[in-house]
Every structure is written in C-alpha cells, then in structure tokens.
Length: 167
Image 1 (cartoon, rainbow, N blue to C red):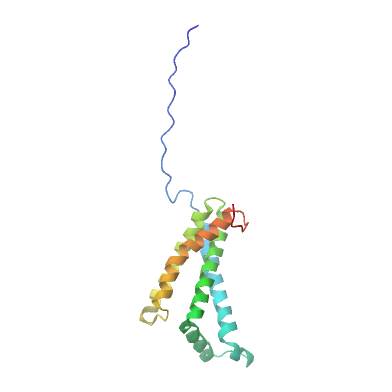
Image 2: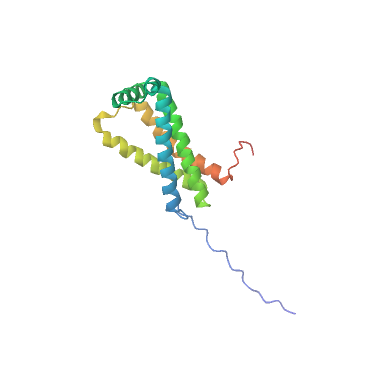
C-alpha cells in the first residue's frame, strides 16, 4: 500500500490587529459621561464640605461666597492634590463602566475613556483662555494620570469587579 503524499497547508499569516479593532463607541461615551458627571459632583461636594462651611451654616451660599470658596480651593496645593485624586478616581470609574459595557477589550475601552476625558478637559481649559487659574504642575499631573486611570478602571472591569492586587 503506497501512501500518497499530501502537502500540508501552511497556516494563514499572522496579521496585526489594529488598535481600534473591536472598539465600541457607546461604552466609551457612557464612560466619559460617567467620568464627567462624577468628577463634577464630587468636586462640588468637596468644595461645599471643605471650603463653604460658614455659608452653609448661615442658611445658604451666595454667589460671592461660592466664588471666594472656589478661589481658596484653587490656590491651595492640598486641595489641588485632592482634586487630582478625585479626577483620577472618577476617570477610573468611567473606565470601569466602559469596560463592563463593552464586555471585551476592557482595558482598551477604559483607556479610551481617559483619552476622551483628556480631550474634554483640554477643551475646557482652552475655553478659559488667559484666565486659567490652575497651576502648570496640576495640568501636567492631569495629563499624565488620566489615560492610565481610565485603563485601570478597564482593568478592574476585566477582572470581573474583583479588586485584588495579587495573582
């Protein structure tokens, strides 16, 4: 019995997967909205609880008291660090939401929430023009931290919500 020789088919070539392959826009938009709204809400709460105690005890804050509290907050290095932490936490929350909604490529979706948040933040700062009250170091920290924070939220979404640091 003679065996006939059958040439083996070579496997298809490995093709690189594009960065935007599998990206879903809706989870990114929802994550960015969650980030923006949560950052706004937590910043206002921080402002109220740490810088507007007297006006709240007196019945209600006036526009003048609010502007004074914002000025005090933006001139305090401790408050700016707290705002950086709030912003990073909220971006991670937005990245987590995007990752959970996407159900695939969670870290990528979280990082893209960070990109969208970074763009929105830069647009907000550019609309202020010359009157930007934030110090330069704060802006640099925000630019450095935003995308990794979103990716971290995506990582937690990929991990199924289990927050454990050891493997």
